Amino acid sequence: MLTNSLFAAVETQILGLLLTFPSSRFGDVCLSPSSSEMGSHFRSYVWDPVLIISQIILMQCIYYSFLGLWLAGVDGLVHTSRSLDQVFNYEVLGFSTTQGRLSMMAFILNSLTCALGLWFFIRRGKQCLDFTVTVHFFHMIGCWIYNAHLPAALSWWLVNVACMALMAVIGEYLCMRTELRAIPVNTAPKSNL
Image 1 (cartoon, rainbow, N blue to C red):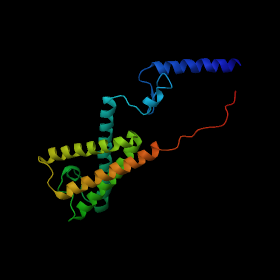
Image 2: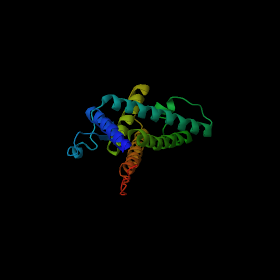
Image 3: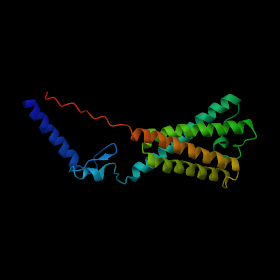
Image 4: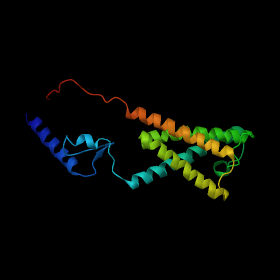
């Protein structure tokens, strides 16, 4: 009896602290003081620019680090030298050369690994397209700065649009599968220990 009342007192204190702390969240669910308000706060988000900026930086790091790994693997297959031209120069991506086709393959494989990054770090299906477009927009800005003009090769645009589509669709699919996973509900009666 004493342990039940002690447990109830500790539970009440912890719940009271969590409900009075304004930014208390567990995952995606914000805690609210009354159960009648719970429906309106389910999956609600607080505007957090630091979180958004850090997620953008994280996705950009994932994009370039895995692209570098895929390109290093491709370079190991055909024994070519590594350079920043493979990442930023739009003329490298082309259908006419073996190096261009392998670089395209690295970009496509990179979109798959970035989709996994969306799944692990973003975790929201409706934000996958936003982060995908942001990553590729910053990549286009990087290519623009590196080449001193906007990319003009049709192959560059085709590869990047295909990569955006793959990354967004696969990332959203993975996130939606996680979001729609059944929540286990224990219907067995609670035992008083």
